[in-house]
Image 1 (cartoon, one colour):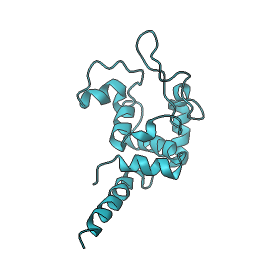
Image 2 (cartoon, helix red, strand yellow):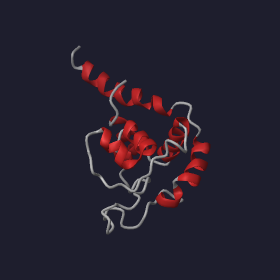
Image 3 (cartoon, one colour):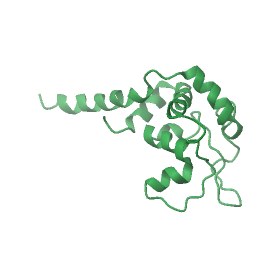
Length: 141
């Protein structure tokens, strides 16, 4: 009987993390992405060239949000906070100070639901494997 418990717990975590994606408007998210994000992250989520190499000011170019990037490597909370509070603000909450980020805060421009819709759109473009890996990064609720 004990050997079933770890299996059940490992299956429960990704499923419970998916609640952030319930009832999201992917079509609205795509439009909001085009209006607010595509100028830096690309119309096709491709990011800027050389996104892993900092510029002269030490700022990394905008990364891709497709499978070639690292967005799907991060948990829901970080993705949301990075968008709402900007790169430096989101990392400062986690104790990382002095990070020179090019990602602006959208908390004054977009509602929380709009941010979640954008993230749901981005997530909808990932493969099943990438969505499962990303979901596994979330703490169980």
